[in-house]
Image (tube, rainbow, N blue to C red; front, side, top):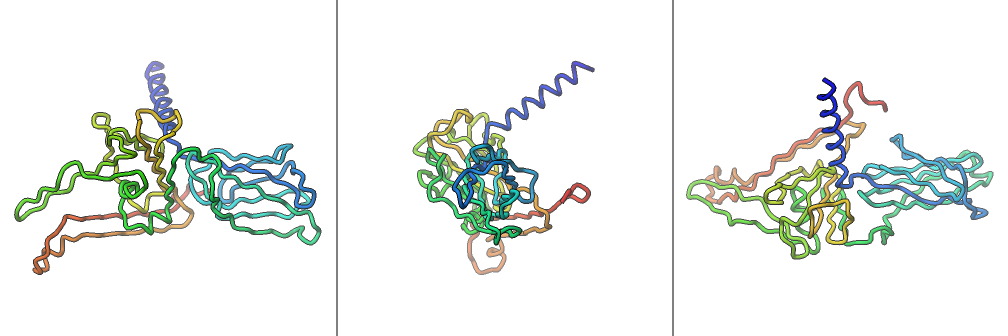
Length: 291
């Protein structure tokens, strides 16, 4: 019995270790100073609204919040004797640091108030030392694409192709083979695919056959060269897909796209076998939502 328990424990450890190969979280860091004296503030409470994540500033006014899931958040800064500050639209990307440097005011006219500001996307990401393309959920929803492979296929330095031509039998249809991605001139098998930290590559061919609905994607990161040592079995590029997390409100979507009915209408139009069926439902699980 003890031997079986040990084997189960080792298997779980290996599973958890394997999930760490692909980054799925980011980090928020910054410096908080006094608006009047420009001196760093110690002991300022920084919390991520709607989560249990947070931190306190140190002697240099620096705070760091790690293991933040990919998404957009509101940060709340509070300290005794200073006005509360709320910063919305703070975007966190996988394997990158979001810097938020702010000042708090101690003026008597501002005490007891909450100052609200909106963060802007920086033009230069400080710790982005390689060629990274980040495509977020809002951009994916606006693109005429289906699945992360089509999103990646339109990025700079990426060529998307089909490995075999489409063969159409008379009076019937044959599905199109899955596409392959070439990044910076490398072979398709030299691209690493990750979904929520887990590798999605075929061990034999090195290609990925994963298919994810647009509504389930939170962010897609394409790294072309210069990637860190945490990624293995890759020589050309990395495609890291992060799926959306649950929300406190119930909502869903249904998408049906097909050109097959054109054959039934008697108009003589040919079908190209373009069929997309997608449905998703999001919300808290009753009894488990801690609000």
